[in-house]
Image (cartoon, rainbow, N blue to C red; front, side):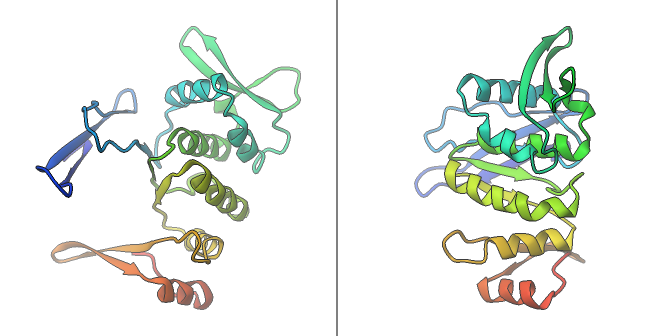
Length: 224
């Protein structure tokens, strides 16, 4: 499906169910029409190439209203320790996110740097996806490798607390290594998969626990 994602599955009892999500190029947003379903699972997609600042503002506004913004502020301090609070202000173009880092005025989120914006979007989507699934494409986009150990620690805590299944892609070997080390115990397992391209299209290689330990300690190449 060009410009979108179509998911098909067959539940334990019942007919095949098809769900579609379309990417709107001009607004850089995802359109996923709601369907009345008893087995609905909230799913969010975070692009590795575009930032939905308007969507983030609306999502964070809800977190502010329900007093659930603490996780987001804690996360952005990984990159900007001076961050004191985050606000959503109404402007002519709609709601916009501003950050207080101790200056004379609040700083627009868009001017806080790519890594800050990426981290903000990631944690906002995570916190808003309770009991659901978050798909993060190129999860390390814009993030310095030095921030990844603390980020994975935080993601482990948030996935457990909010009951979110995180599915992330990356081409960065260090990101894989940090993730495997943080989720090394069986209490909160991690899945590792490599997608390879071949003459028949694509194939997926899965790494079990023993293989993951070998990758973490021996540094085997797992990128497709």
